Length: 225
Ligand SMILES: Nc1ncnc2c1ncn2[C@@H]1O[C@H](COP(=O)(O)OP(=O)(O)OP(=O)(O)O)[C@@H](O)[C@H]1O
Ligand SMILES: [Mg+2]
Image 1 (cartoon, protein in one colour):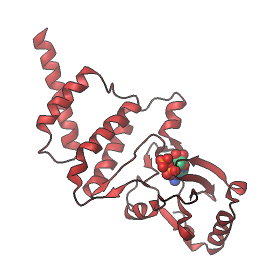
Image 2 (cartoon, rainbow, N blue to C red; image 1 turned 90 degrees about the vertical axis):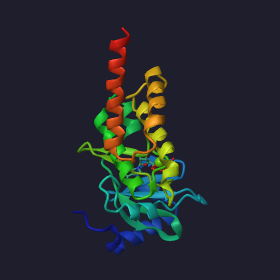
Image 3 (spheres, helix red, strand yellow; image 1 turned 120 degrees about the vertical axis):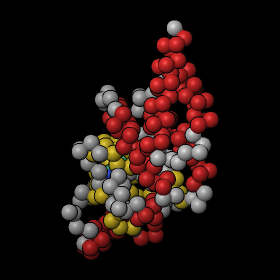
């Protein structure tokens, strides 16, 4: 297991100094960039440096909450004045990079994401902003959710169930796994509207209703031909 970054005082001091001086880009390679900041590789860790005056700089709170979940990088250190944070680096690629390279993603990837979303939901965490740049696949083919900056906690998670489902459907569509606007999808949505509301948000109920729907469609197409 990698030692905790926070325990290495020399590395902590050095990192604080190069971030404060705005010179981190001179000595560390860029892993990626988003709306709220840039992420650099520092000694095999991912250092997220927030844009100046950017208010969304408390990813560390959610990462700390999700500390034991294997799909999230472990939080290692929170920089001074909310300027940056350090987490485990994911060795792999974002979903966006994978798709851009022409590689196809499969149902297994989506099911992993769905499971992680369900784990969050169970804990009252609403995984907002799950897009292709915020999800990576590591070299062991495990899904890693690298950006929890817009996740939030809710006491009334049920209110967000439909939104989470819609976000997942959108993600599936963007992964190239679903014809989002196909007529069969619309039929499915109609069917689900009547049958879903009393069920809990678990992978079993989610996918078994889908299987039922598939069976129903098959039967329907046989009988109407
Ligand atoms: N732990 C990590 N390991 C490896 N690469 C990472 C890690 N965290 C982030 N990245 C890379 O940096 C990019 C930007 O990181 P992140 O999504 O956290 O930034 P952001 O500014 O919050 O994004 P958004 O625009 O979604 O708000 C990611 O798309 C990914 O390529
Ligand atoms: Mg992001």
